Length: 469
Image: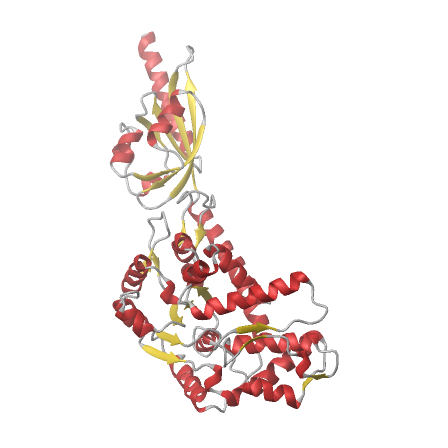
């Protein structure tokens, strides 16, 4: 055999041996020439799930992208990849295949004797399952924390059976709708217990073993709402977490999502949310994979929904999608027979929490019953806790009533101040009074913040602070 033929034979043999060797590699291996044309691919490569070697070999990497073999590169563009390769650097990046397999790819240029690129080796590891497991771990961590919070809340909550006719009707409706998946729309003034009604619907139904996630639509800035509710993929926007983040609808799984203050959604987001409810699926921000909506949606507002519909501030089609069963929760002043029983429940709870043994005096009971409670059940609960803490004796007396009270004659507000109160404490009382008044007077956080002369973020932060007190 002539030397040239022997040399060619040996080269072919080595190439065949090389192909055999790389076929034993568990990671995907793809080799191109200096022009990025594929000359070799091993059997483990993800592209062979939907294509044959003959369909791939001979095509360039840009052509494979153009023809849809690869549908996405992260975090670099194709032009940037070419620049890196020409600079003879190794590059790490992600590629997503037509079948949505996510590959972590490392490129390594092989140089000839003159230092020029002869081959480029692309090794790829399928990280689809790794990404899925990481998302599942994130969900598990979030849900574990959520379940712990719900368990603590259940332990602290006393069972209360109302004798008020209006509340009996509400509880009857809760029992009925908990057994079906119909959309429920809860109305009522701030602090009446709309969240409690929603959680009871969840707890009494078949979704009880799954998460109950409460979302205050007024507390999420408009520009963050989509990413919080729907989640986002890596690199979806500036400041996004590197690995992306599942949204609250995704985390809820087969549980329930309570959208409090749903009327605070801007019209643009209302349209998107309606589409999701109609189609029963959504995508993360910056994502292409479809996620099925499995959770139950319960909505609520403290605004006059009929007026908002007339003014075009809330979409009628979205409202009728959300409101199959309406439930109205009356304010505390409309059910005065509940004030003292609720106050006693709260007092027992705080006695247990703080190791106390306090009781209401007759004078305080009369005051509790006669007060209008503009902040409803939430204000009553906060007031009872405050009285239990500041009272120096076993009986809570009227002198222990430190509160912000609405006067029925002048329509104004006054703050009662203890003799030894500090300037900081007095400022906080006045600040809380103004925050409470603005929240009752204005329809949304934007208007309230504007009236107080502060940013919406500052208003929401301070409102959250005093709501937690």
